[in-house]
Image (tube, rainbow, N blue to C red; front, side, top):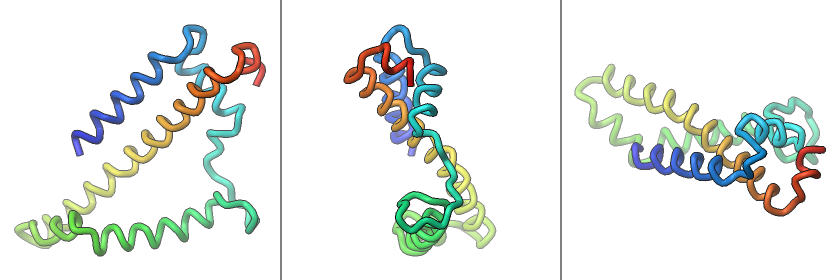
Length: 129
């Protein structure tokens, strides 16, 4: 997992470094927000909208059931513990670490979006958004 963290941090730093000089990290976050990339929760029951809270809840439930129930790395955590308490603690720590990691992955993707748009669009159009 350390290799994944190092790679994500390296990608994030590279993207921030390669942004135009006039765009800071905070400016990039503002641009992404105005372009609708930081809209996190949509509670609407619109079946035509693919990304809502409800689709994430249902899909995430089945994803976590499959991941924590059948994945080899997770089963090794169950069996590798010297007691049931240690196995439960290993799963709990793994779940707690994965949530901030997922947010960081998504934010890195948002910064990639801003970086690509900074290459494709004129700077004046980016700031107007």
